[in-house]
Length: 434
Image (tube, rainbow, N blue to C red; front, side, top):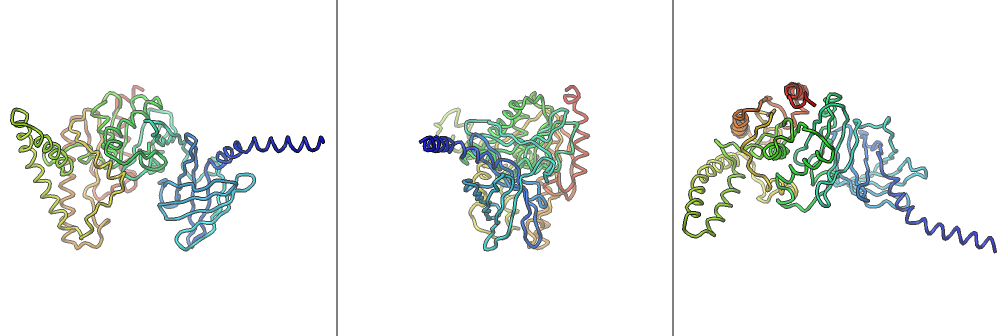
């Protein structure tokens, strides 16, 4: 009888523990996993899994190819079975966790090819990645952003990634500013393991993205950071710099100073001008004759020549391009970000603007004949020249132009960019007072 009671108690206890065992297992997989995909040319891979708001989030890094993190979908994590989907590679992983929770033995499948991939839980000493701490910070209801902390002891320096990238694009560059600065990176909404609200211009408008950055700054308790933005992150820099100049010590644009960051009044920008004309036309169609309509007509007549000039430039550009389908290729989030652009015309904070000029379109369109490439290069130089002039017209801006650099200037011209940034940072009185 006592044996039956003992067995019954064990059964009841085991049933009570079942839910918590599931939770604990979900926690077991959290961490950094490393292994080598056994292809003809073996590739080292790192899988990072963290938990935020009771949800598992995962990223994969091809450490021998790029510092970038790509999102991974966890299809299953039950009873030691681990199933992952990696959309960036159209690949999947099926594995089995060891009883001690430190090994996952499995198979990597891409297309019809399957190869062995065994992952082990990496300690900080074993990590193949630059040393950093990752946390998720809530910036809006149901919206959390990934924040990377590379460490450091000095004034805060915050890196913002461009379109399609995560903060980890700076994993090999940001640490160059240690330990003099406390260096952070932010992955914007829609990318990596940050939240992805519905892709509409409201959720991804420029000032909303700027507000996200401000909320991270507040959450971290940062005092007057310097913001460093690449590519379209320039609009986040300008959003904050134009609306809250006293919140920051300076702005650094890494090939990020294009019309979405600073509107070139002498040249205009087709996308931004078209949006403004579209809004004015809507006002005109709904206005009755009177003072308001007179103003709207005057605004339209002043705006239309600039739009026409931009359209003529775009027409000349498109004449050089190969024919392609008419539909837009932007992913929904990228399209929403572009639709959320606005004009910024005045910045009164210390600025360093680094440009790549000329851009070399042969990297993107190698099949184009030389005469067409020459036209595209000339058009690109004219556009960059207008942006350089717009920044030079600002009282507080320093401009650096790097000939024949890559858009990712902090890769192609790492030493030049590092030197220019450090020289600029050394001039900021706000930082010296911190």
